[in-house]
Image (cartoon, rainbow, N blue to C red; front, side):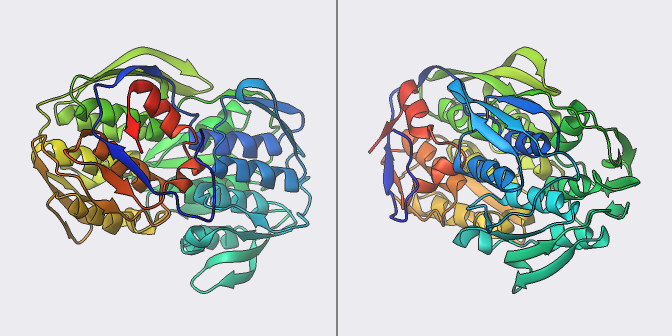
Length: 449
């Protein structure tokens, strides 16, 4: 049974589980799914997407692509097709583009709209309306877009007027953010010149790789040591193609983590993206002593993919996670904090300011959830310290999710290995990124009530 989206909270508990055993493929990567739809929209011809994530966030992006002129259809077994309107030929949407909880979809689509002579109103749910948009809008304004209406503090709802000839700009991102970078590059696609984005720390590079996969000319060079300089030639001849979406490493993190902390577990997670800029969690877990092996490495649609085997790891130990690793695992800190609770000794996660502007204030939500279940932790500035219990987590707490799917899933995983059950106040939003979470975990042996 899929988690249904509803206005009514769906309280859910996880109880101590028997050993988790089996093999599963988590849903398609959310980042790749959003980008495949958007670039399909900007091509003339039919793009085929295999393994698209059919969570609510991505479906909102699909609906927005329809509103801008694409024909988007679902075939059998998660196979989707997008017959695009073509770069420079989008139509103005008649209705508001409602992105629900989809922060990535809304921000990247702002880049698409900014590069076309159309106006579009963007909106979302209560959670998305709290999230800042100004840092995405600022470079788009430099490219020629205009913000006709916005809510206080640069938040949704926003009415954005794009430009038919975006200015080619050079832009240094204020923080390592794939969403800012991607919005600028997507707006720059319809520019009559070269758009350049520079970042001091490398962020996820899915947009650059997928642009190349669709025929755009993108070059990437080192910048300022650990950063990158990305240059895009405007008005390319984008070609419709096939995109095979790998399993989302952020979703794979949940069965992987469960296997590490539930005694006797042995789980194989298939076809997971292992892009080096998304592997911060794996790197950290190996440092903690996790029994994880990477098997069957291969390439698909420009991304590196592999199978991950995770076994119960009795002797996990606390580590220090440097701030420089945050861009490669920003969505995985909630589940890392849960694993750290089962490790021996303290784990320090540094430089987590970005967690304060996610679906919730994730930093505060993580700490509150840990404390509710008997785990000692504290926040110092933008750092989180978790004192591991060496395998003995009390549980019994009620976790407030604040409409955040990753908080919900992380603490349900905690309940599978805790002495007592763990309950989340609302699991309904899990459908935004992992609609079959309960079914997949249940097939491995997990117990929910």
